[in-house]
Image (cartoon, rainbow, N blue to C red):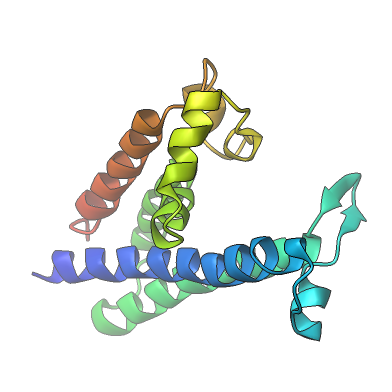
Length: 172
């Protein structure tokens, strides 16, 4: 029972990260700002295009996004340690089993589910567009989508990530 609760907490933490991404990036940046619709000064500042270390993009938002992700992971460990006690090896094992689902693009797939843009995935597959944002070195998509993107491969990565999150919840 405890393992299942741990799984729910880890999955919910990932869901919160993806939900924040949808609320900010999809709804504020893609749906409003990129179309010239009014947004708050904070949103405008967060999505200012900047160049850092030779990369041009929305750097402030990406830093904020990673802060939310790391906060969710740390919250999980703090709550677990309060209930079950501290173990350095548990921390390392669970950190590994939390990073693997991120590598398997769990948040990216949740993003498309929450924003209800699954039809975009089908369009990407049919038009054979380059899904460069899923082929970064920190994602398995670099290898999985080498011969082209398919929604089936993306979904398979997601379900493998969910299974890893689930099974790793019973390690203590």
